[in-house]
Amino acid sequence: MRTRVKICGLTRRRDAQVAVGAGADALGLVFYPPSPRAVTPEQAREVVAGLPPFVTRVGLFVNAGREAVAEVLDRVPLDLLQFHGDEPPEDCAGHGRPWIKAVRMRPGIDLHTLRGRYAGAAALLLDAYRPGTPGGTGEAFDWALIPPDLAPEIVLAGGLAPANVGTAIRRLRPYAVDVSGGVERARGIKDAARIEAFMREVRSADSDT
Image (cartoon, rainbow, N blue to C red):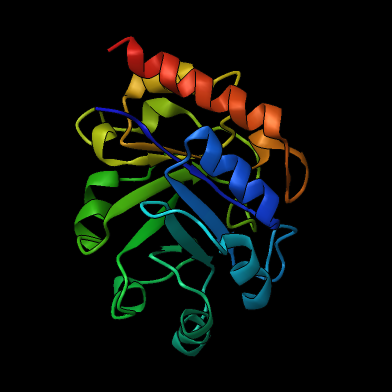
């Protein structure tokens, strides 16, 4: 199966177009004001304007209230929601969109239990853990923490870049990979050459199956 790719933290329409042109399956928009990659609904609409069909527009939220999520959904054509905070399952559901739940990986995490708790999620997204930071650290975590039977279902994030994404795919065979800082030249500003290199490494790893 082909590994899907989400490029997250987009703040400019030109970067979205480069990502799609390189073959990205999904684009991530951060609706978390403390993030250096945050966008307003108006900026998000501009980023995703004119996207071709079959590209998934993902909205990332961190402990946002239901009204805040609804306000974004009223103004931005999102296809999928990503919850990156401490949201219980009931706060992730009921927005009229499929959703994924981010898990910050550290020793002691029981992914089988979490998969059961968040059974309504389309997938779990696994990211690195740093106290006080909900994601986007640019750090990798110990992939040995991922149970082999769950690896084909997860979205792998956390410190991925052209230099290591091929290794990650060959080792884990995740359903999808998620990259942000690994294809940037500055926070929120993507680098076309790095996006292309990342996609080449994904395709190369997929061809080794």
